[in-house]
Image (cartoon, rainbow, N blue to C red; front, side):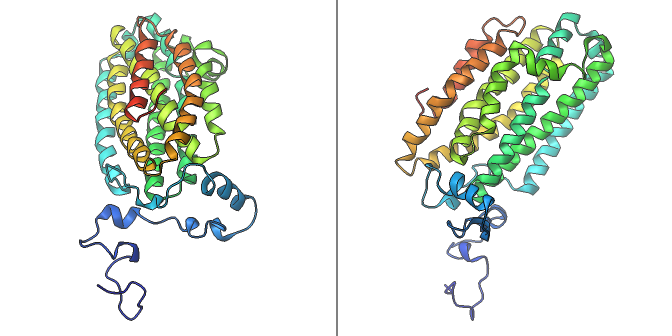
Length: 329
């Protein structure tokens, strides 16, 4: 095999892939070892000043450590091209759900009490989903390897897609029920209604968990699972009971993204476990964030109509996910 440092013998692929005994995959070529800001731990971005200090403090000096973060691999091995192909199919499915229900005047036939519940418990979720998008984007910016960054970027794109869907549904519901304040009242509900204050407190704190490792644990291991189990799964169950098949089926579709996010989260936790001290660090963060998360579940699920066991079910499901990762909270 050619010496990768011998310029007289040109390589057939990138130097970091030259040791493979097989042809590199598309995923390996376009996803691995792409963060040039990690080349010099003392000078990320090859510049002086606040940005350099930020990355040194919150990325390079994170207590979550690994000898080679670039060795991490996404279990789905998605790249930009394959992500778009997959989501094009899913978006077509969601478009079909919405179009079919709109043809049947779905929103106009909703029970008035349930429509009021949507104005309180569904459409204000634009704010919650936007925070999830923002935190996922920050995580993508701060992680120490491009293969982790890709996963976080696709997670960010997922949140943007679902934020767009909530916005669309908000407008549609405002046309069907103009007297209920859809599109106008969500900010006040998000800021003041007791149902949302647990999630608001949780996610506003996650926004300022600047260490990349802590934010990964706070967001992907703790916060997103409780939001998904309460604001997606349990809300969908209430929707079914109240004849809102569209919201229920949208929730089912969203879980394909949720499951993918949980797969790469699981893979990264297992990868971090290769460094023995990381387990104690991650457990400490889980223990720190779980009380806020479970408080948020209780506040939100208490307001869900016709779903008296929603809080217990959501907490159990989120706890089961954490336990599959080996955490004790």
